Length: 336
Image (cartoon, rainbow, N blue to C red):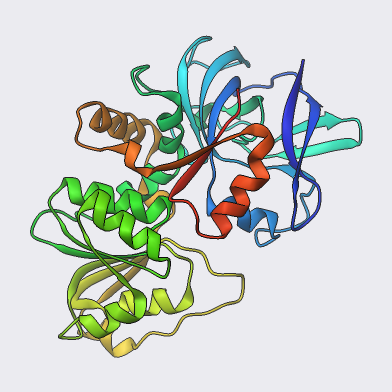
């Protein structure tokens, strides 16, 4: 069986769509037909070689909606025909070995959940069944953006009565704001892209300012109970720590380039400030993804507000370019 896939063959890209041979399923592997896949800044980091180069050529993409097509040995979590979300975030089930696909030009490496392809072999612990009432376009957002961004809010106990600053209004930051607003948290959105600030004001009803305006606005210095940094920017990370109260917590979700450092005042730590980092919002696939699906279906989490644009599979490089240029909150690719 063959599949079309977007392959990273060279650092810097572009992704090249080619036909691959799907390998025989091994223990703990699930074959899915990918419906929609989200575009994440982490994909750009992979393409730029910031996550390593030794495994190129390889397949990227890590959040998707899909249908289960076939099962490897030992898989008990899903059955053929199940409607699932695929994610890089781990859940219940077997941790299967990495996948290698064969092309006319040789072997292609893939991880536990690669989703920029029509059919994909996914590790059992990276799929979770969700209600069919969640459309496949929005369901793809449940693979990374929502459980990471909304997960930060929930797992750090950010709720009504708190105030929150979010640096970076992309898929993760917007998901954090969306969840926080649903809980009546007083929120500030901080970004350098004007239309994203307008989006936050119009769609979420939050305070939204440029970074320099935000620094001039807040008085006194220590203002927020929580700050979440989602931009992957050094200065934003430092400002997130500066802007919290002595009893507050700054949470770093963005990624700097390898070797880049941030500076903070250790005296502020001694006084009681906390700085932490998160990997996937602290979410657990089998608990959090169905929960946010139900929050959407109940009307408490309006996932449709996050979706900026849908690209065809052939337009995947255009979508990644738009993402890098700050033109998206969350873009997705229609794969099948």
